[in-house]
Length: 114
Image (cartoon, rainbow, N blue to C red):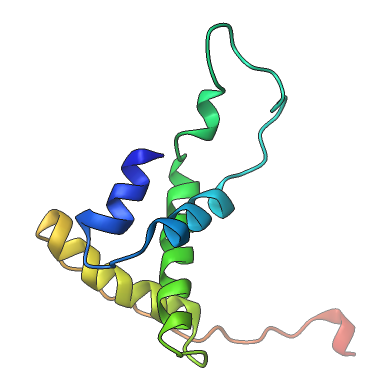
């Protein structure tokens, strides 16, 4: 958890505060089976780390929160995430995001149309 909060607040130009970073972290966590069972000698470790899919949701929540606080509400979430990745990737990895080719899917005719 500490690494995710440091990532959101200090390691990237997102400039997220502790409350917002904690909220995004907590809301990105999946439900944990047997969450009331504590292993001998400590706290449940599954609460303190993000699985990969949880990390992806963490990025999405940080992006949505960043734009909502800036007053941007009409932008699709995908574009918000792309903008945040454009900030994070050069800073963290020295890399740039590759644009995704988006194409419209053709509607198929189904038996229900007849």
